Amino acid sequence: MMDLHETFSVALDALRSNKLRAVLTSLGVIIGSASIVLVVTVALTSKKFVLQQIESVGSNLVWVEMIKTPDKAQPLSHELTLDDMEAIRISVPQVAQVAGVRDLPMSVVAKGVERSVNLIGVTQGYQEIRRLLILRGRYFDSTDMERRDKVCLITRQLAARLFGQENPLGRTVRMGELTFSVIGVFVERVETFGLSDIQAESVIIPFGLMKYYTGAEVIRVLDAQASSAEDVPSVQRQVERILRSRHPPDAEYDVQTLTAILDAARKISLALTIVLIVIAFIALLISGIGIMNIMLVTVRERTREIGIRKAIGAARREIMYQFLIEAFLISGGGAVIGILIGLAIPVTAQFFLPSSLRVPISGMSVIVAFVVSCSTGLFFGYLPADQAARLQPIESLRYE
Image (cartoon, rainbow, N blue to C red; front, top):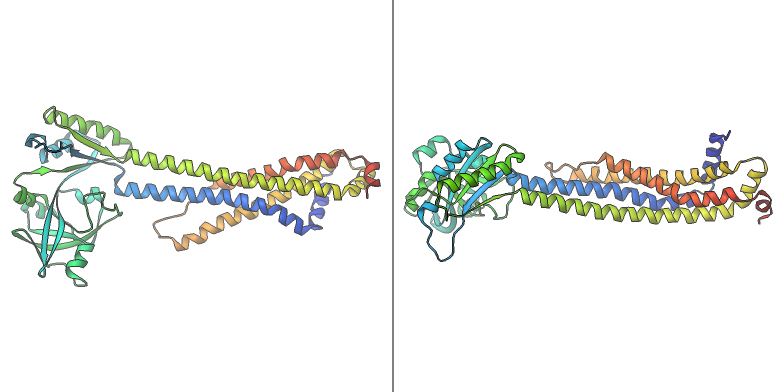
């Protein structure tokens, strides 16, 4: 029977006698295995960040706008109304919250300064759906909505422009013929860069006050929040059906969700991950070729040693296993070092990232990096090991 312990000791002694060569040979494996772990970690982090950004805007959100025909007046019967919003709330059980908005370009005057702003009338539930973050003061309560109190909230950018470093709470701003009291300052929880109703300089007021300016309780955008992401397609279909039943046949509505954007983000992230992993595998392939070349040189240099071992009774497979163990130690040791480096970098980077963004570490990437690295070493180490095992003792002893 072959003595594996002795074979392992001989292989280890051979590596110790050529430490620099072993380290340089394993360098490619270190880089390749670290690359696999880092690539998967970066891919998971970027995917998580992108999906969080999209989901924070409202992954469960279904929103509706009336499609307007250019240069053609739309009948009032085509417009979205508060009754449509209430019908969706009552008729669609998967809807957790609904809200409606109507916006108008307006000029606001405060402390003698006039600025152009986006005036937005909102219904109850708008803050929950759009996830507005109140920095100062409060949001509208039910009394504000019912009594149509002349109160408003302004964006952080507008507060800085109108009031500078002063506290805007309790200050008044004039828009048109009405004067409003500022009760809060808000921001979007996630920056949408103007893609939502909220612009950089916006003022939101209770929806009831918009009737004073427009003369009609018309909604420009109707938002419906599904109870879960799985309910979004069903809610979308039911909202379309309800609107068709409540409006003339020629009325057209654009019912949109973020599902398509989420799917596209996942597919892009998956494609980038695959490309980067292929690049990491190429690095491991190159390192495997390097291991094979070095092992072939090692076999040639140690031909006489191999002959001596065979002359004193070492079997063919013992010689083969000796060189396979050397290849495994080089690739396995490099894999462990590379994995530790690949884990240390994201852990260190976590201290410099926002607390809301956590760097996920994939245990599967660690296993894959180790298995692939060791397999690469064994695969490319087999040819030199087989060549060493096939050497004839007499010819090996005569080799100089």
